[in-house]
Length: 111
Length: 166
Image 1: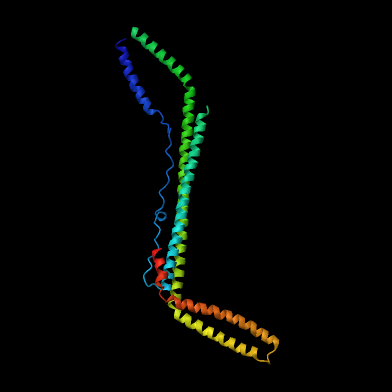
Image 2: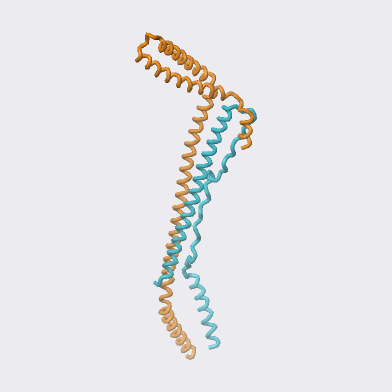
């Protein structure tokens, strides 16, 4: 018996290890939603107002004002798009959290 | 012989253990299967959320870039309009003055007719109305002339300085 036990136990242990390797893996924790990096066009800094030179005429000031208005409009639209991008991401995370809550609820229920 | 008996006993014990274990572990296996299914569904849901998010972000960027192109095109157009208007201000002022002078001459002509005692009451009323309209047009043109002439004038320091520091 003393010789028999090690003789059978060793292969059995090896077999158990091998079969253990065939066991399916369960993704118990699902990786969270990854928000994509905002596009480069949405993360550009807004332009500062242009410098008004000494002795500028009323016409030159009008031209500067026009350029600044364009920069402000670009900035406002970029900011709005960036905010929308963040809101989209926030909604995706909320949806994901809701799906996790649903998963937890289903797992908690008896089969 | 004794070893054979041991082997048989071990095999039977193993079989009994297997049977008992499988019976007892049935619920566990079902739970594991369910957990696996739910986990796979969670992964699929996560992947769909990420796909939808990427699509919405791409759409957002595309709309922004389209609007940006539109803004750039409009800016180029209105910038050109302003530069042209400023560059042609002398000619514009000359045109406005010519028109204004013509209207002022017409007002004087109408006034002379109004003051003429041979002019009928109806004609006098019509001329008065025409003069009122012409005076309004002259005033508007005079303001335009002043504005165009002003465009070439340097902004006074007291007005420019606060703008420079804002």
